[in-house]
Amino acid sequence: MTYAHREGYVTTCANRYFQHLTPEKRSFSYFERQFYINSFLVRLDALYQSRSNVEARCKLIDGGADRFAYVNPDLVDTRSDLSADVIKDICVICGVDGSHFQDKRIFIDRMILKR
Image (cartoon, rainbow, N blue to C red; front, side, top):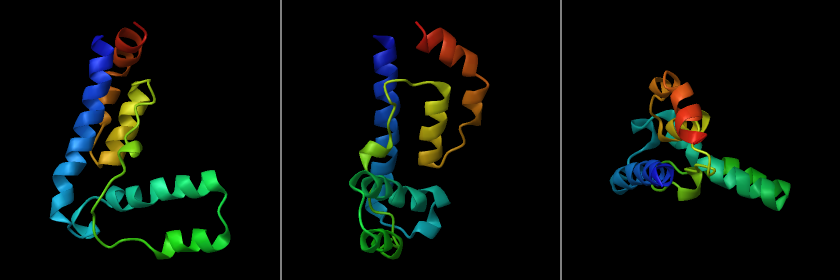
């Protein structure tokens, strides 16, 4: 039960963080570079899944937005396995330093996740 709450908490916090930043609609230059990269990740995955043609791939590169306005909630994915590596990935997506979780790697992976 505790693990499920932890997983939900991490997902909710990451999505709320993006929701907090979204109304400002600032330029990507205001944020960490990762926010700009995030704008492509979901579209890139959709192109891969659909096996799109070259024209659609070109639009992905050419059609990038100049302002931060939205992050797809599917980008923050705990994969039903909130290991230290997954937490690190979520930190990268949020543009925050996740190195302090690496010190707790054994505790997270063995004591919390395995139980």
